[in-house]
Length: 433
Image (cartoon, rainbow, N blue to C red; front, side):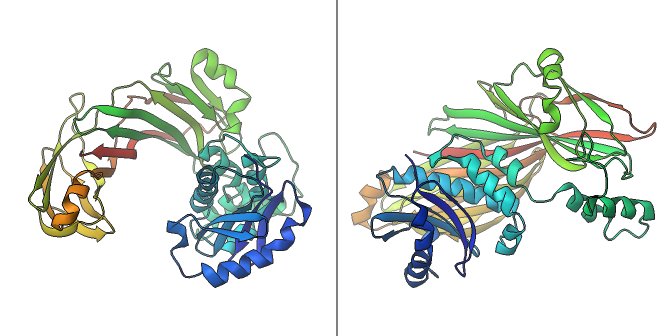
């Protein structure tokens, strides 16, 4: 599968970024594409479909968000859904990198966006690449911007700090090793913080059997140290990692990790994800039991969900930001609901149960009834009923991966070092039938 062109437009038709792989004159057709987009798709739910515009012998599949259009030009037969998956990947990267969803912000980062597009396509052929790698390429917020964000608004800004910053902005300072992600002359508050965040990807069938079970973790560092310190991060266990990738600051001493299982690096200023890892084949235990019950009655479907807090390895945890989305087949009408905690929001073919906190030693219950016509009921019973969970558990490590110790060399004599674990749901699904 290959494409002719990849492009990003603003909602007024301005070309923000593009890469032409073949067909030099294809760019000239974008005004016609934009004209058809305005005529047939603007103001519609195009993002919920798989929109494609045809112009002569070429197809223009595209996705949209806010005031941005991301599309491709294709002149050969291709698997359309696979191409849309790539467009949605680019969309997700832009959404996470530019949360304000502004085309003006994209204009300020066009070089990085161009590099990102080159990483996704090689002469028009899509490449296998992870989302976080693309985010590291395109993430807005250079070192200068990070420093500006930290010093703007402070009441006691040191004049020498501002002077150093201005020299780097004006390109008057010497370019030295590590200067691509830190400025040694800037004085920090001599503190470094680590977050070990693990995302749980799990899918269970109706009998509770595990279909998919893996952990995708990341280690973030928030560094406010002065000068050029060197950090040595000791993890309690690393042999269970099936795969990992690292930030560029770790590449020079990756052999230290391979040999001694220690992360050695000069940290970037500000907050940066320095290490990603994947763990498969591990039994994941969450600090709650999820007990569903699905019943088909005469023209009715009754669903009960019981969620109980439970200890893991002898330790109890509060579950925060708990949400449960119940998706049902088309044709069902929501009837009675019964719950003791949270709120219900009705969606298209689904309901969203905003639970909030699941406290230690607590249990919560939801009971809902759906109705259907007699003609539809037999078809509905063959449809899919499933629940997707979202949650956050602080101080919890499903894989038990933790930072044992952090050593700082070439740093201040007195400094603060802290590390914490956070578990979050990734794709967490329970199938009810």
